[in-house]
Amino acid sequence: MSMPENLKPVGGTDLAAEIDALGQRLTAVRERIGRVIFGQREVIDQALITLLAGGHCLLIGVPGLAKTRLVETLGTVLGLEDKRIQCTPDLMPADILGSEVLEEGESGRRSFRFISGPVFCQLLMADEINRASPRTQSALLQAMQEGRVSVAGQYHPLPKPFHVLATQNPLEQEGTYPLPEAQLDRFLLQIDVGYPDLDAERQMLLATTGIGDEQASTVLSAAELSAAQRLVRRVPVGESVVEAILKLVRNARPGADGDANAQIAWGPGPRASQALMLACRARALLDGRFAPSIDDVVALAPPILRHRMALTFAARAEGVEIGHVIDRLLAPLR
Image (cartoon, rainbow, N blue to C red; front, side, top):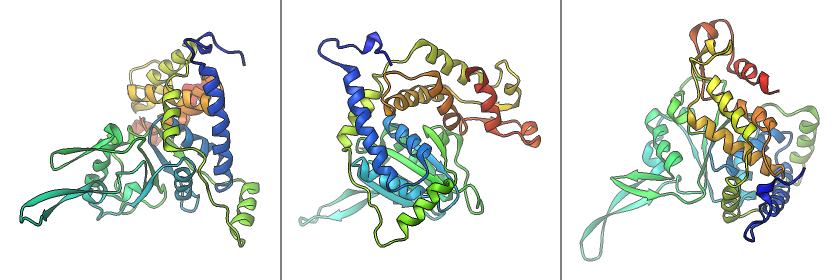
């Protein structure tokens, strides 16, 4: 692949060399994760794209597909301080954010001291997030969007980088609370986790039921991940890719022209365009490429758009699914 003009050294900075070096490090990250997580290459790549883009992701899949282990492995391999919260209906916002306690000093003077909750980490896993009550779910909104939380009128900044990787079971819906659209929009990607193929499942059986079990080890540090996130934003994007992103997202909204649009009740906002642009840059960097292409837009449109759209009642009654509508919107780009 030829080097674009805007990647050539200017003022002593060689962007192409930085992209190439990071691409090699990310290859090692992929390889190390692949020793622990079998048969989920696309899921792993999308999770890495989320972290490189500085976002949060929602992992949806049936139990037993290594969603929890993937998050734990990502935290270890990327050198991030990770914590986990198991969401239940009785989980309170203070159980996530922390709370203030009244203490009495040696002099007898009383004062409040803030005790931080599990949200004060770099990689937070919210397991079965839809089992938490709406009040508790909303406690994560400010953290996900602003990187800080407010307790008793005081702001407390979160560590950087900060990412939320939430999981959700699509089968058992009794006792669950659907995530509000405002919170869904904060997730950069919705990653659907499927079953592994035959060869991967065979390899998994042999590797995980013996005496030894492969353990993850650190490849990157949190500081290196932050540097990679800054590099993602410097990756140049061609005009054709920008136009493809704009056309795709705008056509996914009610009122736009097209057959698929008549089935859309509400569509993605500008945050979806931003997410797709960042994710395309991150995917190119993950593959060691100097700039994203239309193929990146096509590959990343489903996980970015599927949780930012809703179908009309008539479309749902006819058995239409969001995936079908997105495929029709992507047809001109293929």
